[in-house]
Amino acid sequence: EIVSADFCKSVIHSIGAHTYGEAQTMIDDPAQNDVKATSLRRLNTLAKILRRKRMEAGALTLASPEVRFVLDAETQNPLDVQMYALKETNA
Image (cartoon, rainbow, N blue to C red; front, side):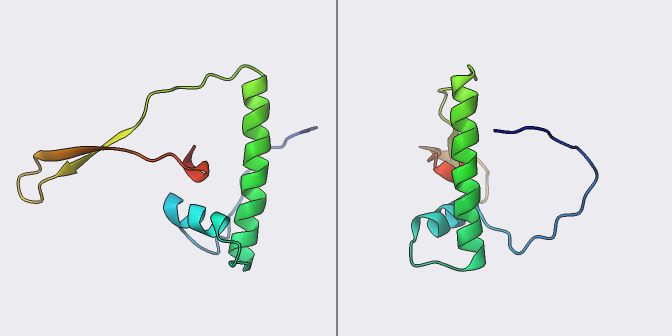
C-alpha cells in the first residue's frame, strides 16, 4: 500500500537500455541472475501488484489490439499487417 508520495526533480542512473522483448526474456529466464535480471523481476512483481489494484479500483481496460505494418523499404508502401504481441513488460 502506498502511504505517501513525493514528486521532485531527480537524475536516473541507468545500468542498461533494453527493448520490451529483451526485458521479457530476462524476466522469463531463471538462469539469468545478474543485477539487471533480478531488478527487472522485482519491478515486474511491483507492476503486477499496482496493475491489479488499478483494475480492482475500476481502471479502464482497452481491448483494442495494436497492429504493426511491414513497409516496403523503397516505396514505404504497406506489404503486410501484423498483430503486436503483448507481454508483461509492455502490457
